[in-house]
Image 1: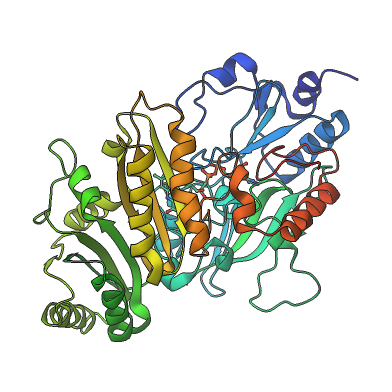
Image 2 (image 1 turned 60 degrees about the horizontal axis):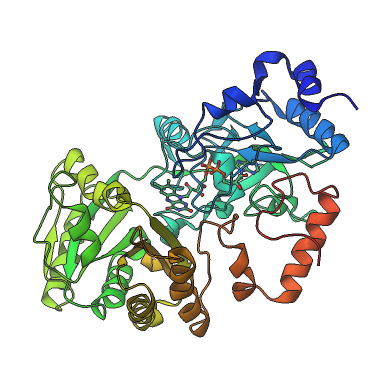
Length: 461
Ligand SMILES: Cc1cc2nc3c(=O)[nH]c(=O)nc-3n(C[C@H](O)[C@H](O)[C@H](O)COP(=O)(O)OP(=O)(O)OC[C@H]3O[C@@H](n4cnc5c(N)ncnc54)[C@H](O)[C@@H]3O)c2cc1C
């Protein structure tokens, strides 16, 4: 058989294929700045070219790692020297925004923030939003079923998709570009590709559902004296603001103190409190919304739920508050730092976090723990800053986080997926029968195991 890289150059044109040396000039991912590794990187321009690439790789038994914005938090785009990387970077067009139907047709490589802006320019709103918005792609968002800051009100990425186009491992194009809200004609095939981390096909295009653009945005950073007040404040806001509550982001006091050190973010209030919540309501009543928001904050004070509050007076102050939540660069230094993403019932969070702290103290006494999360949907993130000299730190931190989670029936992945990073723990959150069915699907749709091999689970056995 002809050399696969030569064949790919022949069908795509040399400009669309980067050799090993050019691949090494790119970084591995957002989190890992080491040189990327692969036999070659292909940059198909459309679905047809993805189909040609995969048909060739299928025939050669050639492994393919799909890459969008490479912001994966679970090493989902990790490649090795023998892989071909398929980058969606040239498939980035916003093909159509239909304000009447409230839909948009987007190519997989489009950057989330670019799509958000284009949609907003037409007076509409794409509710998907996350800290990586400037780099992550819609294709990657669907492949991981991304969550983010608006899940509380709008659901995860899956809930925003009406139709989808994907290419199977053998090059077959599955075009399910449905634009209707209701369509129960047979299996909903798009679900095969949403949240399956590129293991069952390469997503090339999608139809997303848009919402009317809210005309009001009310935001506050509030401080709480203890964790008991957190779910009470959530219920208070839910009952008083109805469906307008869009974000309810909790930060433990240690996290806020760590990201407001000199040289990082400016502290907008006293940083000595136990808990902080960044909350935001989106509405459409310019006259009443901010008045109502203030009333709800005031009653939260009166009921002893919050002890301090800051409301932004300008867009730059609004962005500065969100930066405290979204920009945690200062925590990522010095290395090693491990990021965790788990979910569990909110009623069990306090006990669970205390157990994690105990386990870390006993097994990794030098480690520092920072906690935050999209708590309204049961999602917590942990940053564990280990000590460079700590032996076996990653494995010890994994155990400290995941083992107590078993007791409370939580999930080892709320929104980031499994990737390579969490696959050893998959059986804690999924039964043997569920994993067996996942493997059956994988073997059926990708019989040569070429798409992101080894991701989520290992085949065989
Ligand atoms: C600062 C920061 C904040 C973040 N915040 C959040 C958050 O709030 N919520 C959240 O859910 N995640 C978050 N993430 C994680 C990450 O941004 C998401 O997982 C995102 O959806 C990945 O998109 P991407 O384009 O970067 O995909 P990549 O990282 O390139 O890929 C992710 C996975 O999807 C596969 N894939 C990519 N494109 C395709 C495609 N077209 N077809 C098939 N498979 C594909 C890849 O093979 C890989 O397995 C954050 C990351 C960072 C760096």
